[in-house]
Length: 259
Ligand code: SF4
Image (cartoon, rainbow, N blue to C red; front, side, top):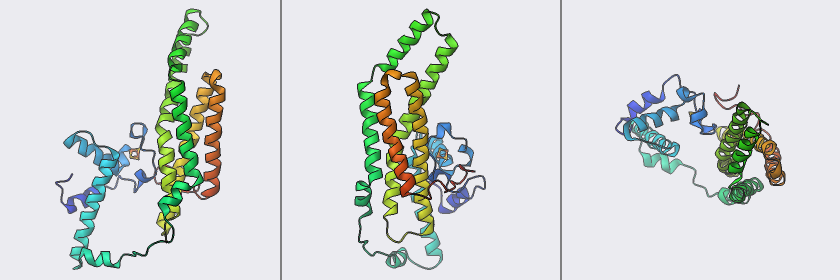
């Protein structure tokens, strides 16, 4: 990709199959994504992997940024202007508030951090409980209390619930922080307002899915009900706060992902 010229890159970007900006509002779980053939970001990662081995989403976004910058520079030169002309026209007024600081102190960000802490502490104190569940199923199988199919189904549900919780736990913090920070940015365009609403919506969806997954664990691990309930309440609190603070988030239609 990096050996491409800006014009090659422009051609690549114009693939009519791509859904514009779909990767801005997705959960980055490409393994489970139904839109890989419509995602420019996925295509770029695939291309890079084919060329150089593994590439992370961050790598490919960095690449997009670099290629886009090159492309813009070329457009500016074609117009007979210089990069410095554009920079000098940029609004460099210092905002009165610091969006980073506001975001760090925002109640949603603090609540998301608290959830990450509860999740981590649950895993730490309950390390052996999956193994215990495996033994329990084995005993039940030996006694004929459950069938092999029932045991497999239950294990698959538990495994899936863990994967979902693991995947979304860091995403929740990252995305809501991003949305909160943008919320405090100075003089935002309509596009950026949509953008932070899209990030807030992604956070809400991540919470919805995580709550459902924790409920699956609660069914299978009734002895952990106290700890799991604490986590569920924390997530629910965060969900309610985000719904209140970003009232337009649910209404935002994520390109390709929402109908
Ligand atoms: S939209 Fe693209 S980046 Fe997002 S999960 Fe799907 S393939 Fe991956």
